[in-house]
Length: 296
Image (tube, rainbow, N blue to C red; front, top):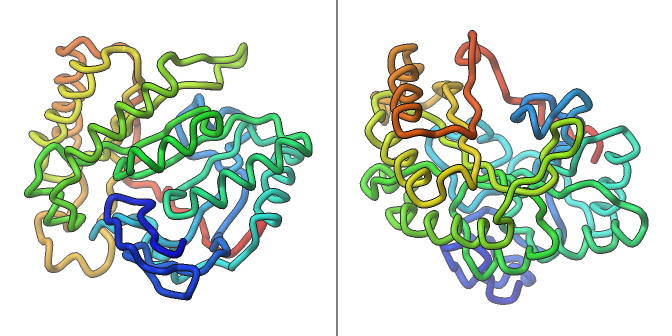
């Protein structure tokens, strides 16, 4: 914390002294906006019971179209200690959670490692899902070896220009490639229990952006060519334009049915076998829960 380099931004700020990094957080405590059962993840993550999801405040990436912008900007949530975070994990287990799902956890990795260790000593037996943007430092991911059981990671861009325009991160493609390699190194083979819930493995998500089919196809092609069916691909059509998108008019609409169908056809033609798609009217649904400090 005295010289924070947990994420690829490598700000080097002294968070322990109250300085805020690019992620928008400071201090030694953890900001959490919600800790509750969540039904809107992939079937092998949420299942019938729900994923024990902890939404953290702040974000090292902060995309212009962020669906969780209330917490990404570190505005919502409550400051808690590592000890309280451990208790939350155990409380979610007691509620019947299928796993502990850590959403946007990067900038709290040291506290999370400590909290998971403490909770396991007190009986935590659930898989830990590291739910991230894909913009991860390999050095930070190495801290999670033996901690993260499932990596649920985005792979947003294969185009540096697009990454710069929407996430202020032109290095995203190279960073995400290196991060994914480390994730697969740690969890090289998916394992599911008798109920079909993932206990170990890697799921790569891609949210299709309107007008960016070629970028999406490039992501799918890269992941499949490098990792084949070693990882699961989750192709999402749920993009929702958020208020204030006037500066990015090309994103101020939903993804069309035809755009999404073209992406699915492309994946099938490549030979993708392990994956998840969104059907029906998911593009018209809201997947954003209330960040009201429930369970915190």
